[in-house]
Image (tube, rainbow, N blue to C red):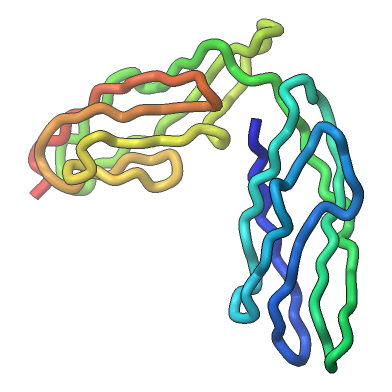
Length: 173
């Protein structure tokens, strides 16, 4: 699987590009290549690949390399910890059908699922949402907001497990 890590940097003095990589090699976690953060950016999202068999809490550190006053320097981050959950094998989205009835209507979505161990959990914050008809509604986090009358399908995914939810928007203008 892939774990997304948002990295924020505190810069002082002269701004130079920063190169980020894993501080130590971990067999089950990889960053495909060092990532360069341009001098005008203070944050970046890294995509780490995690071996399928990894479960439970993981801990890693990043190494930042840059230059200051013509000298190269390296700084290690504090530990980043995360829990790696087994992916869901079954998902349910609530509500199972969405009807937005006017321009001020909105719908909060909840994604529930069962993992391979039979454990039920809330997957809403891990879900991705994609609407096939982007002219009728927009996704804001886990909410759906109307834009124009019409119908479509919302694809909800956590990992490789997906669910389709019908969407109908009326009186949006």
